[in-house]
Structure formats: C-alpha cells, structure tokens
Image 1 (cartoon, rainbow, N blue to C red):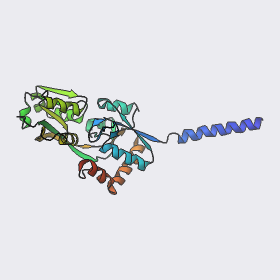
Image 2 (image 1 turned 120 degrees about the horizontal axis):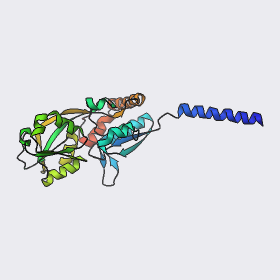
Image 3 (image 1 turned 60 degrees about the vertical axis):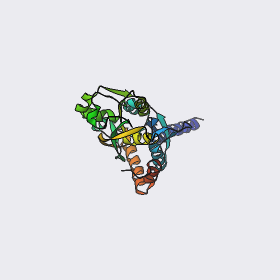
Image 4 (image 1 turned 60 degrees about the horizontal axis):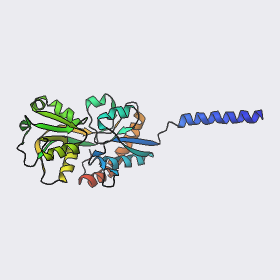
Amino acid sequence: MKKLIAAMLVLLVAGVLVAGCGGTEQKKIVVGLDDNFPPMGFRDDKNNIVGFDVDMAKEATKRMGVAVEFKPIDWNSKEAELGGKRVDVLWNGLTITEKRKENILFSNAYMENRQIIVVAANSPVKTKADLAGKVIGTQEGSSSVEAIEKDAATMQSFKELKKYGDNVAALMDLKTGRLDAVVVDEVVGRYYIAKKPGEYSVLTEHFGSEEYGVGLRKDDKELAAKLQKALDEMKKDGTSAKISQQWFGEDIVK
C-alpha cells in the first residue's frame, strides 16, 4: 500500500512539473480593439465584430495555431488594458509612435496612414489656416491628438479641440454643424465618408503621415516573433493583399 501511495505521489509531482513547464504555452490570443473604428474593426448590422484588422488577426492566429478572441476596450485606456494583461495585443489601426514605444512592443509596420481633415461639403474651410477660430473634433486617445499637438501653431489657432469617444460620433457632430472639421485616420475617414456621398470633403493639407503596427507587451518577445513570422508569410504569399482588396479595393499593405 505504501509503495502504491508513493508511486501515486511521484506521478502527481511529475504531472505538476509537466503542467508547470507546458502550461505557459499560449493557447489563445485576446485582441483588444475599438469596435467602432471602421474599416479596421467594427460591428456589422448583425453585431458581429468585423474589419480589415479583424481578418488579418484571424488569419495570423490561425497560422500560429492559437485561438483568437476579440475584446472591445476603451481605446483611451488601451495601454492599461495591455499592461494589465486583460488583452494580449492591440490590433486596430494602432499608430507606431516614439511615445508609445516606451510602453509597447510593436510589430513591423504593415500599413501607412495620414491624419486627414474632413469638413462638410459646403464648408468655407479649404486649408489648415482656415481652421483658425473653428471648433475641431477628433478621437480621444488616438494618434490624431498627437498629430494635432505637433502642429502647435495651428492647434493654438483653434477656438476649441473637442475629443470624442470614437470617430463616428465626431463625424456625426460635423454633419449637424456642431463641429467645423474632424481630424481622423485616413483609412477610417475615407471609408466612412464614401458611404455618405456628397456630405463631406477632405482637405488637401493634412496633419502628417504615420504607420500602423500590432502592439504587444514589452516582455512578450517570443509572441511578437511568432506573430511577425505569420505576418511576413501572409505578405509573401499574397494573403494580406487579398484581405486588403476585400476592404479597400486595392493592396495597401506595407
């Protein structure tokens, strides 16, 4: 009996050790996103989360052999969500900036973007200089805020800079006349205004160019390497281009 108990204890300890060694292997990746950021990530008319970045994440995690879960978060608190391990990656038109690099490990850039200025179709605003004395809207916590702040002279000329929870709300206020202009990611702005022909206009001038990347925790280097390998393979075999064609009508993957 003692021998049987001893044997069982050995097996139990061995099982714990195996679990301890293999239990750290990631089986699922939780993607944090703003679910009102079309066409990168948003809800369709059936309330399903869809979008370009969603399709990219599904394909990449499939190649990595892990499940994926999409978790809508307050985009203004994205770094806290990532650092608190409530999500594993930020993947939703996340702009790579030097400031964000202090707390986030980025994948290689996969898309270029500009911060465009959207006005009503009949607006007298034609240039950045015309924004003086006007009320401008943008998404709180977005790279649009940083882009505007970099152009201090123009920003100081505003009557007010209003920050919204999402770009759609800002564009709605532009339509109703509560805003004079909205500064927004080009991929989002052009996607949205294409659905409202004749209502909006995009100025020639903008607030600068930038690049999108996937954000991970600084110490998740192994996960970052696996993800980058999947993204590189998707680019090489044309899968990324196919996904881009579906959402943008052309291959705009970097």
